Amino acid sequence: MTWTYTFHRFTNRAAFDAVYDAAGFKRLTGATIPLGMNGRMAPPETVVFDVCETLHDPAEYNLQGVMTKPAVALTGFHVNVAWTGEMPSAFKASEVFPTVPRRVFA
Image (cartoon, rainbow, N blue to C red; front, side, top):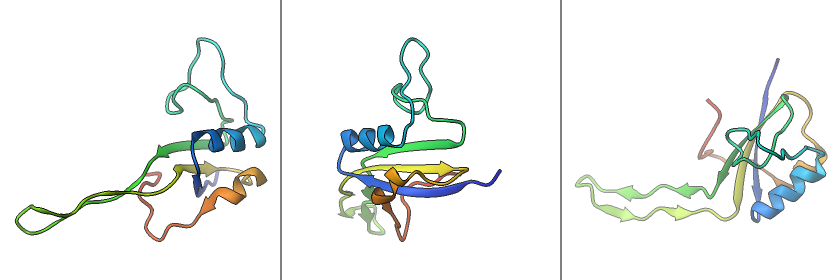
């Protein structure tokens, strides 16, 4: 099985939830809660979501260990996705192509 990895930025969690629903993924209800999705969603086996939420450019320090530039939050609600099939069209508008991804699948 071959996995394809994509990066997505949404305005907020509600925007991600709307795209998730538009793609036809089902939400989990009841006592059984999947790990890794804040207990909210159960995607199919062919998709893995890494909900990063807010990402940051790292702080910078000089040789003495003094911070010279604080960490800066990047705009948006960030989600990384691994797919074994084709990415649903609902996710295409939110796809971004970072030069240096802040978090990736290992």
